[in-house]
Image (cartoon, rainbow, N blue to C red; front, side, top):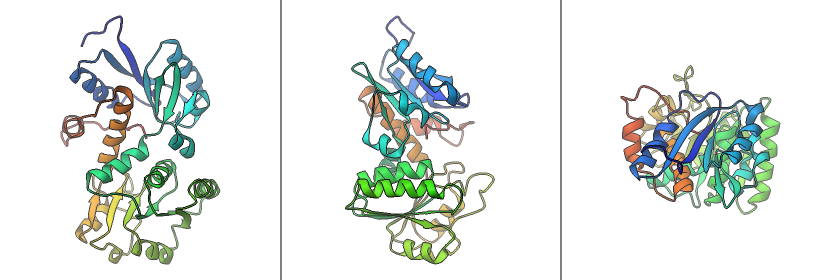
Length: 298
């Protein structure tokens, strides 16, 4: 569609963004539905986040996705934030609602919807979750909101450990009827015991991503049993070593490309009230023939 004097502006804010597929994906949806909207990418360093949000207000933009390094910084410039975004401490989607800028986080929604699309309901389930960074926190929050019974988070005892401890304590206080714990990833006995009593094993670390594509956090392959669902936030490669090992053992495996797509679908819903054609977008923008990847908005 041609740009008019009434065209509504949406965008991606973060850095770097030149490789992003977000403009193509969102503009495809706008055009498909005949909406007078356009989506652009704006390269914004962390220190310019406030300027970018002021420009958002000045230009009357209707919505934006926020990617690194601006996802935490942006919170202080918004009028309201969702419960999930507040608990995660980050925002990846802004929507103008009745003159106010409201922040949301759709990463965890993408994780939950990807599971749901594969027939998995988190209610009453136990998850062993590897990693305690931003992606993991978004998963923790949404999984708890969706009724997960227990989440055992495993992370290396590195410089991030104390930050992870504070976040786990905060989430336990917010969800007193559910259980969430932080454990040492190097404690293989504790990890094994947790996986054996879990319904879902999820990797939210960079292990499995280049240059670690030949490495898995799970060394004991006997832990992969047929009734265990195994997921990975790494989507390049589409099937990590952990997923390959789990599939050979007969586990149901779920890669992260679906999580990436469904978090985008959640943003589309916030922008337009419409359901993104997930499979259509997947085939068009994320097929093996596609020559570049999107960073998503996570």
